[in-house]
Length: 239
Image 1: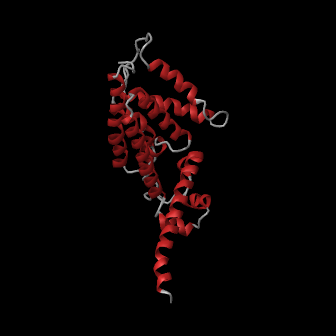
Image 2: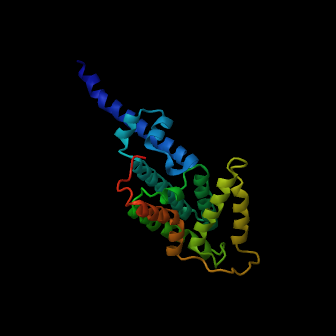
Image 3: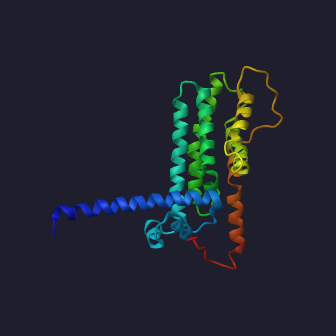
C-alpha cells in the first residue's frame, strides 16, 4: 500500500463531511424559509441531495440543525452590528445595520423564525438577546449622540421596525422582493434629525417587553406541547 496515499484519505473524508454539512445547512435554511419549521430531517436530506444516513451522521436530529443555523445567524448579526459600530458616521452605521438585517430576512437568513422554534434551548434564546441587544443600543446611542437620529428613538424601536418590515418582505416576496426598501426609506426619513418631528404618541417597549413579543410564538408553542403532554409523552426531535 502506498503510505502517502493512505495519509491523504482522512483529509478527503473530512472535506466531504464538511461539504455535506454545508449542503444540509443550506438546504435546511431554504426549506425553513419556504415552509417554516415543519420540514423534517428527511426532507432536508432530500433537498440537499444527500442520503438520509449521511444527514443523520452529520446531525442527530432537526434540533441540531436548528442549533447550528442559530449559531451562524447570530454570528452574522453580531458581525453586522460590529461593522456598524466601526463606521465613523453613526447614522450610516445605523442605516447599514438595518439594511443588512433586513437583507438577511429577505434571503431567508433572519433570526426571528429560529428564535420562535420550540426545539431551541431557552438559554440560546436568551443568548441572542444578551449578545445583540447591547450592540443595537450602542448603534442607536452613537447616532443620537452625533445628533443625526431623533432623540426620542429607543433601541427597541430598531427591533420593531425590522419586525414590521419583515411582514412587508413576507407579503411582497413574489411580487417585488425589494419592496421593503421603499418603506425603510420612509421610516429613515422620519428618524433623521434636521426636520420637524411629531411627538410620538406611545412609549417604546422595554427590552424585556420586546423580547417577550419577539418570542411569543415560541411560548405559545410550548404551552401547546404542555397541553398535549398527557396524550403523548414523547416528542419526536427528528422531525
